[in-house]
Structures are given as structure tokens and as C-alpha cells.
Length: 116
Length: 109
Image (cartoon, rainbow over all chains, first blue to last red; front, side):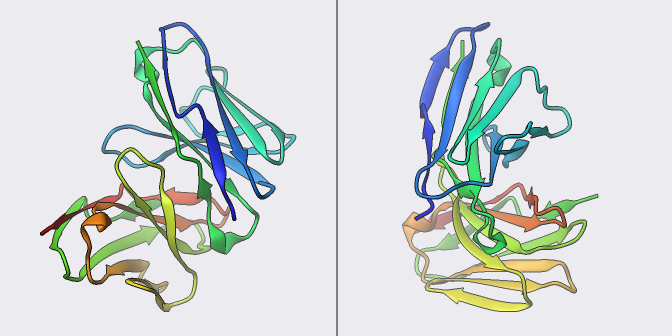
């Protein structure tokens, strides 16, 4: 159990367009979902934490108007990269927590975004 | 501030044993996690320690010393498929994971 899916797995878009990434917990209800970004050969960088039905909490330096997060239900969170630029090209990974500390976070497979 | 330190890269031989160390400083502490991440993939959970001591799970073991702010991941009988990055993460008082930069483990035949 504890499977998290993410869609799409890869996306290429033109500069100035918006891209939506979906994250779903398939077999459990996720009280909290997390969005990370990872550049090549670097560690995970937490972008924001979202709880169902409330506004996301963004990390310092992450523009909330550029990276729109919606956590509509206990099984779905979306990240929309608005007006994408080449520097937004990265590996975006979502994760979900079941509410028990010892299980940590369950990660989706990630989305490779390339902005041309 | 909060900080996680782990070596950037390690090399080991197939069939051998390797220990990856991690030291942490966090505001409060709710456990230490180890994740494995293969290139181009998302991390997968390996272990969780919240009490001092050694947790063994097959070929992988994880150790924690809370007083020293120290953990290690021990991998035995190394296989080529163990080549990956190993991420150490400490959970702070807000139940947020603080991530290390990861240790890239290279396994040689």
C-alpha cells in the first residue's frame, strides 16, 4: 500500500505557457502533500506543503503566484507552473504523508519539466 | 539553523560492506529517515529511526545516536543495483523533513 502517482511523467512546454502537474495518493488518504524540486546532482528542495482544504505553505524564496498549489481532496494535489521559463526546467516530485510519523513520506515518480 | 551533513560520494566494491554517515542539527527531533534514489527516479523509503540503536532490515541496517546527532546506513553484500544516491533526512519538531544533499554510492565490480 501507500502508492503515490504523478502525472505527467515528462512534459515539454514553450516559455510563457503554464503546466499543471497532478499528484494522487492511490490507496490512502493523504493528510498532507509536499512538493519538491530537484536540480541535477542536487538534493530535494521543498517548495511547499499543502493540507487538504487550506492554502499551501510556501518555503522562503518560492513564489506562490508562480507555483500555484491546489489540494482539492485528501487524494489529489496539483501544482501549476505559470508563465514557465527555461530556468523552471527541473524534476518536480510530490510526496504524501499518511499521518503516522514512522512511515515518512511516500513519493510520486516525479515529473521532468523542460521549458524551451 | 538546521543542517544535515553527509558525504558527497563514496565508492565500494561489489560484495563488500559500506557505511554512509549522516550528522544532523534540527530544531527538535522526530526521527531520522534514509531514502534511496536512483538517477532520474523519485526517492524510496529505506528506514526510520527515532530511538537510539541499530535497526536491521535485510542487507540494510540503520543506526541512530540522538545524543551525538549522528546516524549511519550500513549496506552489506553490496550489489551493482545498490548504486544510487542515499538521502538522509531528519524530522524536526514541526514534523518537517530536513534533507541532506545525498551521498552518491558507486559500486565497482
